[in-house]
Length: 312
Image (tube, rainbow, N blue to C red; front, top):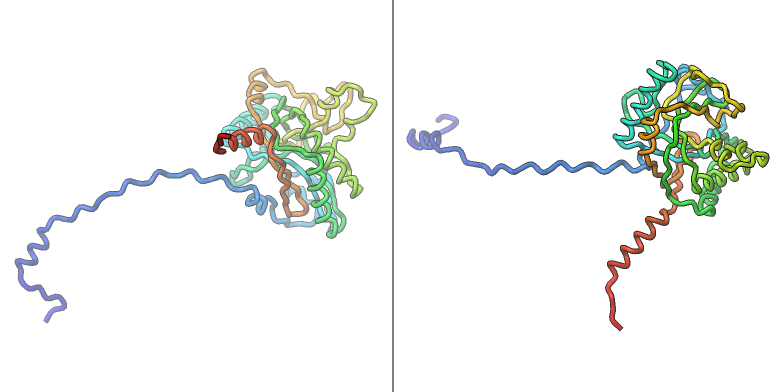
């Protein structure tokens, strides 16, 4: 007896001639856009693995550390992080490309918008100089005191806008940064003061304190020199026309001649911040800012609309 035994040839033919069954085709579900990654996820991968304890410029495109590394110390920095959207990244890329081919002819201008793999990188506003905590036991108290200082100043989530392109050098004058100069507002001033107060407790250098020289009378001039900015590119080559009149400190930036079209494009950017980032070594902590008054008022009005009305 064979492995398969058919009852007769007629039934076999019937099976072969039977039309295939029609299966209902399901329409594909629309592709849903994935939600953005939370900032806490990015914080876990914000630092690269340290491959050397010595200052090796070859690992950083030729750049040198402004603060030399010392074993046992904890490099620390406080900033406001900005992750540009696709349209904003495209605009910033255009500005960098124009700078390469135009104003300085700086072919070696390196973008800070992407890493070597093409992944978009977060940009930032510095709220401190590069700090160095000299003992591990200082790490947690520093972050705790910074949280308390930010809470006391009552700074809220806010937005700011860039006003122009400028060139800023590092303190050593070995590297130049193309930056978006920002319009200072109350929140930036409050946060800077709070961060400087905590840095002073640890005998650390303060940021932009030169702009608060009492001999400088004009408030608007002090604000222009304060230096709040976002770096978008860097170069080891010094840009042309770097002489200032009168002399200005490196962090104040060199006024940069831009076309009316460029200024108009910059004015379209509105950059929002809702938390502070504190980097101690390779650890990153977030300090959320309170919701802005406008958002809080809108939220309160929404709650009022949903509450049932009662008649007395």
